[in-house]
Amino acid sequence: MNQNLYNLGVVQAQIDINTQKRLNWKQLIGMSLTRAVAKFRGSGLNASQTINILCKENPGWNSEVIRRLEIGVHARFGEMHTAEGAR
Image 1 (cartoon, rainbow, N blue to C red):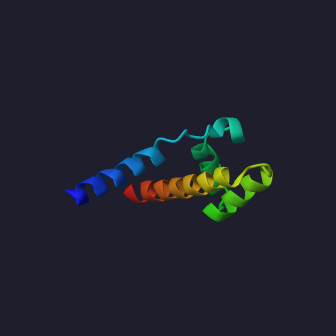
Image 2: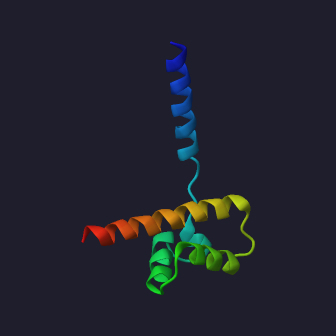
């Protein structure tokens, strides 16, 4: 029984993390994060270079915004790479 309660606690913690307010990238960078990644990727840049450019263009971002940016950029690069392989 205790293990079930622990598992429910872990699940609830993940739900709480994943339901935090999402960032509106369109307001922050003027376009969706997917569109920005596609633009930079099309220019031959990788995920780290994309993150560095976006951070330099927006020096006022706090560590939480940068953390979410890193996660989002890497996720979208991975999605685009997977989509290319599926063709």
